[in-house]
Image (cartoon, rainbow, N blue to C red):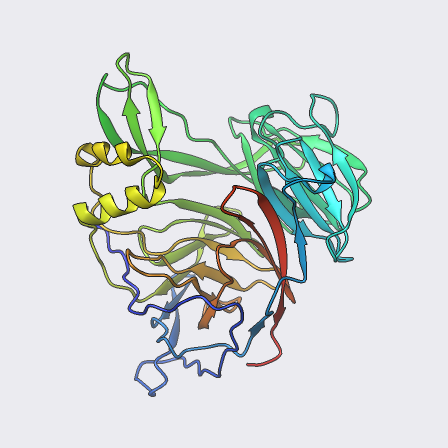
Amino acid sequence: MTIRIARTMWTLRATPALILGSLSVACGGGDDGGGLQSMVRDSAGVTIVENRRPLPESRLGWLVGLAPTATIGTAEGDPAYELFRVGGAMRLSDGRIVVANAGTGELRVFDADGVHLESWGGQGDGPGEFGAMAPSGLEPWPGDSLMARDPFSGRISIFSGDGTFGRALRPEGGYQSVVGPLPDGSVFAATLTTFERGEPGTSEIIRRDVDYGILSTDGSVQRDLGAYPGSELYMVNTVDGSPFPRPYPFRRSSFEFTWGDLVVITSNDRYEIHAYRPDGSLARIVRRDHEVRAPTRGDLRDAVARQNPDRPEALDDVGDMPLVEAFPAFGRALIDRLGYLWIEEYRLPGEEHRLWTVFDPEGRALGLVEMPGSFRVREIGEDYILGTRADELGIEYVESWSLDRSGS
């Protein structure tokens, strides 16, 4: 199978703030000189949005702040600010920031300035408590509540905005992970990837299918949506055949999230997003032009060296690593609080940019935004960007940056 993967054609250095200029969006064919166009068509009830790749000068008039409005985290001091294994962060409607601190099994709550207010949950098996490596993620829940994932315990916990534990939901029908709620009260869920024993002493890139479904709020299955390719894993089989996953620089990943009343099940094999109705029928495909570039053995060696700067022996394994056919088409994808689709552009070897392409709620490309330094975006709201980073010592921080959408 030939997989078509994109190559971005620009290299820009990240800047702390980016004032983005004007753009034009056209629906139709010819080139109007702006370099940014979208074509929307219907095919048997499926809306297909074809987008031209934005040129480097295609910009939104949106302004990212010069510095974080709040920074949460410290190397030493008050334990409430010492973060470890941050599994997610989100903001409540009143501006409070909730941090999933899996290292202590807590949801830590801070005000808009980053001052600690209280902590919810804790480690344990009781109501509102979390097991190992949890909470691992946060998602909004209807009624200004939130859900926190506890994957190893096979449940999610739902808290109200004042920290009251509401209830736990355990998916049935073999599903182990809740992606998020839908407006009609149902829940989007998925299975977890399982590993199988392989031939002893071998290594390979594996890709298991993931099953998706729609659940009722009690966890019972309303509808199975079928199986789709999951994320690739580089698997090393030990001498007894036990599988041992290892990092691989260019693996292709799967993504699932809700987009209004639709569910997204897609991967970065190609630069396109597939959104489905809760009955399983395909509703929307959003595509963007891209080119294919295949990695070389030198690209793989350089990437492994960057991932293991203190372990030169890691390069000894490069010769045995399989080489994928093409780079992923993009890095990550998420929906902001206003329904806009944000896709992180994949950084090819030698590129330093941190660009995201923004699409409107219908899937038309608007332009490019560049994110701050080494910063992992967790949530994008109407006027903020929330994310995490780690410094050179591995100290974790949660940061909130302002986002001004008034210029367009």
